Image (tube, rainbow, N blue to C red; front, side, top):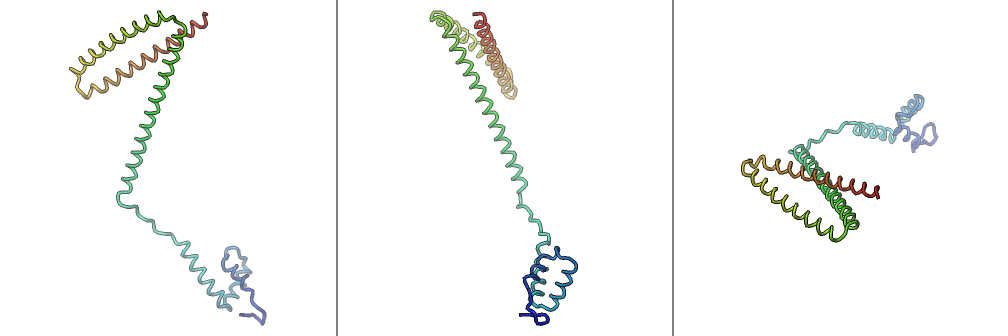
Amino acid sequence: MNSMKGKPMNHKKFEQMILTPEALTSEEREELARHIATCESCRKLSLQWQKASRMLNKPLPMAAPAPGFSARFAHSIEKRKEAEQQKQVRRFITILLVSLLSAALIFAVTYYSTNSLETIIKDTANASAQMLFLWESLKAIISTVTGFLPTVLLIPFLLTAASAMLTLTLLWLVSIWKLTLQKETVL
């Protein structure tokens, strides 16, 4: 055991001072320097701690990404965007179909509950005939258009026509719904 003037050394105090030099006052620094000059084990600890501190504070070199990483990452982001867009389109179409089916169901329940069987049969036959006529007319229009439109323009034309039909159907359903509400308020 090292001693100074015959007294035992308190190494724990100096070890703590070595490991936390930034918290020392100037008197404590001087006391630590005097102790390190006389104590071999504390001197070794101080040197090791200084070396470890330098190593810890030394900046580490940045690792380069693997070849092609940026391209793969950009591609994966693009794929995720496409998947999210497809998911949103599917969600929109599902909501639209559920809405249309719900509206049709509400209309059917309202219509069938307020009309007689004879009126329902007559209206169903009329609607079927009109739908058949509309279908035949639509087939004639499509065959005429496909005969003179190039394929590149045919797809946007069909999408526009389908959108127009959907819009007209929605407008028709809303107008029937409003008429049904007006009948209920009159009654």
